[in-house]
Structure formats: structure tokens, C-alpha cells
Amino acid sequence: MQTNLSKFYMDSDSGDKTFKYMVHGVTFTLKYAGRANKEFVLCLARSSMKHQVTAIIDDDANQEQLFNATKNINLDVMVESLLIGWSGLVDDNSKQITFTKHKAKELLTKLPDLVHELYAVCQNTNNFSEDFEKK
Image (cartoon, rainbow, N blue to C red; front, side, top):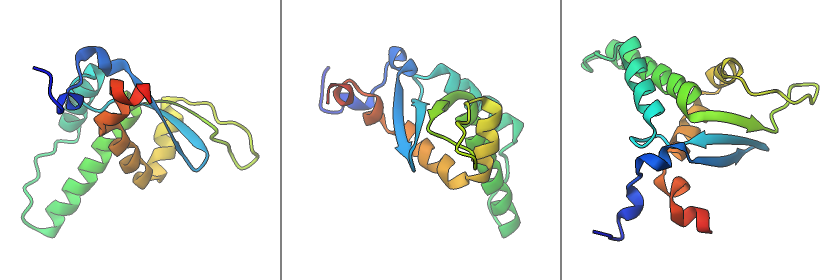
């Protein structure tokens, strides 16, 4: 059944679609953060297990532990399955920085708010839908 909610469904073929997102002159090439992206699903599961998100939120210490674990999971998932490239990123000498996962992790570790922003872009189905591509 086709409805006006169809744009929220991403089939498995759409898991490889990419979206270019520019922030401060740097264009990031991103993949969809959802079930259609099998690499994302596996990476999220592995990272969650690695960081053992089992803390019970009942005091400030556990909240800080959960926050840090979630931040690390988001960083891992972004670098390993969502961020696939960039252009326009330069060092202090205006030399282009080539994308690698290692360099991405180094950069995004220092910029947790950017990880959050990019993750939100990856979760927005409109950025990867057929309707968006036609515009």
C-alpha cells in the first residue's frame, strides 16, 4: 500500500545511497543510519557490545558512564559505517587532508558536536529518499 508515509521506509537497496552535507566549507559524504544500511546495523551492534552499555541510570556516576559510552558508540558507528569521505578539509597550512578512517576518528574525537550533527543528517530519511534526489 502506497501512502504519504512511504518516505519513511528505506528498502535494502537504499542502504548504499550517499548524501553530501556541507558544514564550514567541508563536504562530508554520508550513508544512511538505519536498518537498510546493513553495515551500520552490524557496526552499531558490535560497538554497543564493545562499550557494554548496561549501566542503570540511577545516579550521576551512571549517567556520566552511559553518556560517555553512548558518545563512543556514536563515534565508532560514524567512522566505521556512515562517514565515507570528505572534501575541503585542510590543515593549518591549507593543505588538503585526505580521508581515512583513522583521520576521521582523530578529527571527530575532538569534535563531538559535529558527530552529533552528522549522525542527525544520516538518520533523516528525507536526505536519502527518491523525492529528495529528484529536487
